Image 1 (cartoon, helix red, strand yellow):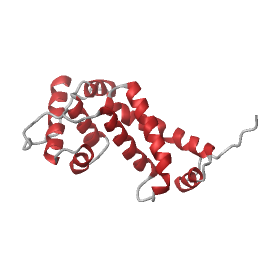
Image 2 (cartoon, rainbow, N blue to C red; image 1 turned 90 degrees about the vertical axis):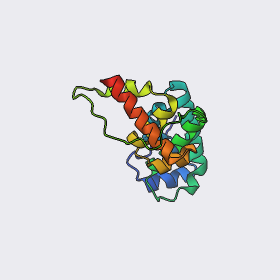
Image 3 (tube, rainbow, N blue to C red; image 1 turned 180 degrees about the vertical axis):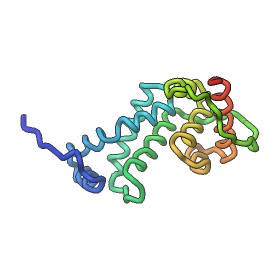
Image 4 (cartoon, rainbow, N blue to C red; image 1 turned 120 degrees about the vertical axis):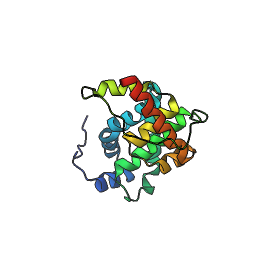
Length: 176
């Protein structure tokens, strides 16, 4: 069978244009280019391989359905990540998973030992309660502001800050 080759070094604009033209090879390339990073994001939030895979699949269906709306106001990866985060949160159904914490908790950097490995930190993060883990990952790992997290999760900024602080407190306890 003869297969058409597509260059793997396409710019975002070229890739999006080809995907918008229903070029299946370009669509496959877009998926291959972003799937690992996006799966990692989904998995860290949902903490379950199968649910993260489902969220990733649903997110890419939404990406391809809405690619005509992508206006290059951000990078393609950032736009896809927003969709992946929203799909993952829908899968997780976070309503009611946030602990009522003091909204005036001060946030201090968490000191960790110098020998801490990425695997140890990842394992500790996965043990956090769902709400605290999700907010921590969105703010501290993915770089969302507390306002953006509040909007994404339909919580207050104070709850976002409290959950982040609570997650850091638990991590300090578990990693010390």
